[in-house]
Amino acid sequence: MNELFFSEKHYKLKNDLREFLSEKIVPIKDEIDKKREVPSWVIKEIGKRGFIGPLIPKKYNGTELGTVAHCLITEELSRVNVAISVPRTPCILMSYLVTHYGTEEQKENFLKKMATGEKICSICVTEEEAGSNVAGIKTKAEKNGDSYLLNGSKRFITNAGVADYYFIWAITSPNVNPRSGMSVFMVEKDTPGFSTENPYGLMGIHGVQNGILNMEDVEVPKENLIGEENKGFQSLMATFNVERITLGSESNGISLSALEDSKKYAKSRIQFDKPISRFQLIQIKIAEMATKLRAARLMSYSTSKLHELGKDVTKEASMSKAFASKMAVEIASEAVQIHGGDGYTDMYSVERYMRDAKFFQIGGGTSEIQNLVIAREELKD
Ligand SMILES: Cc1cc2nc3c(=O)[nH]c(=O)nc-3n(C[C@H](O)[C@H](O)[C@H](O)COP(=O)(O)OP(=O)(O)OC[C@H]3O[C@@H](n4cnc5c(N)ncnc54)[C@H](O)[C@@H]3O)c2cc1C
Image (cartoon, rainbow, N blue to C red):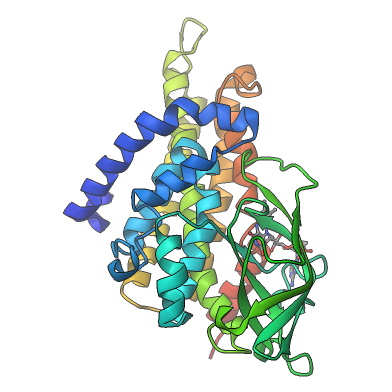
C-alpha cells in the first residue's frame, strides 16, 4: 500500500522515525500508561526532530514535507503509544492556523518556536455548554484600547497546565450570528487572570493532560489576535480538517498495533495442542481486522494526498476520522478477544488499545457530528 503514497522522502522519514522510536520511546511506552505521564522531554524531542513540522514552511522552522508525511508520522507515533501523539496534535493544528491566518510578525514570534516544540500549544474551543455545538461558545473578548479582555471558561482542553500558548476562541461580536462573531486569540500561560485545573482522569490515552481553563479579565494585546476579528469560526473549520485527518491516523496507529499483537499472540498461544491461529474462527477475526485496517488507512492516506494537493477535504476528512475510529474500536476489541484472559489484564497492551481507541470517536468532533458533515456534503445541490 505504501507504494501508492510514498516517495523516497517518506521512506527515509519512516526509517529515521522508527530509529528514534525504538531507541527512545519503546522502552517507556508501557510506563507512560501506568504512570499516566508523558515525560515533558518527549514532545520537545519530537518537535526538535522535525516531527511537528510537515505542514509548516521551512522559513519558519518547519520541514514542508506535506500532509502524507504528517499522516505517516502520526501513525508511527501512535503505533507505539498514541498518548505521545495526542499532546502533539494541538501543536500541529495551531501551527497550521498561524501558518495560514497569522501575520508575518506572529509567524516570526510564535510559529518558529511552535514548529520545533519549544512552545507547546492548546486548542481551546469546548465549553460546559458548547461541545458539539461550537457556535454556542460564551467566552467573551471585549476590546479595551489596544488590547482585549477575555472572560469565560473552557473544558476538556488537551495540554491544560502543560502548554505555553493557549489559542482561545471567544465571542467578539455578541449581537450577530456567532459564525460571524467569534475570533481567536493566543494567550500565554502566565498571563494574569488565566488559570488551569486538572480535576478529572481519562478512560484511556493515559499521560495526556486534559483540563479546564478559567479566564477572568485576561488582558491580551491586539497583536495576539490570530486572523481577522470575527473570522474565527472560518479559521477553526479549516483547522478541523487537519484535526480529523490527524485523529484518523492516530486511530490507524492503534489498529496497526492491535493487529500485530494479535497475530503474534495467535501464533504462540497453544490450545487443543495447536496454536490458536490454526482455528478458522480466529483466522476470520484476523482477516476482518486486516481488511478493516487496510480500508481505513487507504481512506486516511488518500485524504491526506488530496489535502496536500490543495483540494477541499471537508467530507473526506470527516469520513476518514469517523471510519478509522470506528475500525480502531472494533479492531482493539477483537484483539482483546483473541488474547482471551490475558487480553483483559494489564500484562498485554491490547486492553490499553481498547481504552485508547474510544477517545477517537469523541474528541475532535464526535462520530455523530462527522456523519452530519458527511450527510450535509452528500446532500448538497
Ligand atoms: C480526552 C479529550 C480531549 C479533548 N481535547 C479537546 C481540546 O484540546 N480542545 C477542545 O476544544 N476540546 C477538546 N475536547 C472536547 C471534544 O471535542 C468534545 O468532547 C466533543 O466535541 C463533544 O462535545 P461534548 O463532550 O460537549 O458532547 P455533547 O456535544 O454534549 O454530545 C453528547 C452526545 O450527543 C451527541 N450529539 C450532540 N449534538 C448532536 C446532533 N446535532 N445530532 C446527533 N447527535 C448529537 C454527540 O455526538 C454525543 O454522542 C476533548 C475531549 C476529550 C474527551
